Length: 387
Image 1 (tube, helix red, strand yellow):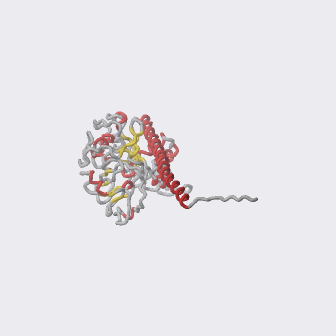
Image 2: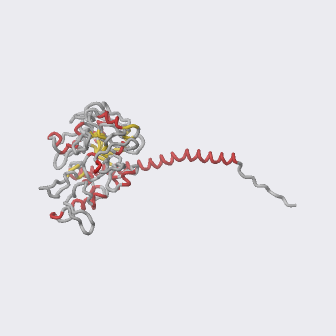
Image 3: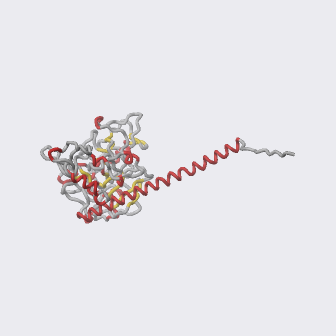
C-alpha cells in the first residue's frame, strides 16, 4: 500500500505576517546602521581636525607663531607676479602634515618670470610665480586639495577636487567679521582682532601660544563649514532664490543689509533648512582651499553652529562684513579643534549671549556668550566644558 504525504505551504496570512516582521526588523536596524556609519564618519572628521591642529602647533613651534589665515605676494607694476596676498594658511601647514611635496611644488612656482600666465607644454598648467598665482586662477596645484581637508560627512567636499570642509576661526567679536582685516583700517592692520586666525598677513601681527591668555583648552582653532553644492555661475552675479527652488542655508552666504548691527537678523533668511525665496546669496562656501578670503576658509563665533550665514550687503564685495558660523552634517553640532590639540563636539544649542548686540566690538569679552568666548583668545572670558 502506497502512503502519500501532503506538504502544506504558507497561508496568505502567514506570509503577510512574515513580511511585516521583516519590515519591522529593517525599520529597526536601518537607523542603527545609518547611525553607526555617521558615527564612523564623524570620528574620521574629528581625526582630520586633530591632524590639522597638530600641524598648526608644529608650525608654531618652528616659527614661534601660528600661520596667517591669508598672505602671500602681490603683483608688481601690474605684472602677474603674485597671488594678491590671498594665499590661505592651509598651504603653510602642508609640510607639517605630510604635504611637503605639494608645498614645495607651490613654493617653486612654474615657468620663467617673463612668461607667467603662459602654459607649460608638459603639464598643461599655467606658468606661475613662486608661491603660486591667485587662488581663483585654476592653477594645476590649486585644483587638488589634500584628503585631510575633507570631512566624509560632507558630500560637497568629496565631489569637488579643490574644496575644503575645514575652516579657521576668525574670532568671537565684531572685528572678526570684516574681510578688511588686512587692509583699509589701521586698527585691524595692527592685529586688533580676537581669533587665532583673525590676524592679518604679510608681517602683521600673528597669534602665538603666548597670545592665548584665555587658555588653549578654551579657544577654538578650526571647525567645519559645508562645501556649497548648489549650482553657481559667476556670470549670474548673486542670484535670488526662486519660488520653487531649494537652497540649503548651511552651504551658502545670504545677503542681508543690517546684519552687522543685529546678527540675530540672519536667522530670518531661512525656513527649515532652506533659504527664504527671494533671498540673494553667494554660493562660495569652501570653494577654494588655497584662497584666504573668509567666505572660503573661515568662520566666526557669533551665530551658533549650523545657523545661516549672512553678509551685510545686497551685492557681494571682498570687504563686506560677514556672519559665518561653522556648519556640518553631523547631528546637533560641529567638530572643533581647540588650541590645546584636542577636538571637541560643539552643540548647536550652545549659549550665544545677546545676538542683538552690534558686531562692532574690537577687543575684550565677546557679547555672544560661551560661543563667543570660545572664539576669542584673549577676551578675558572663561568657558568650561561641556560646550
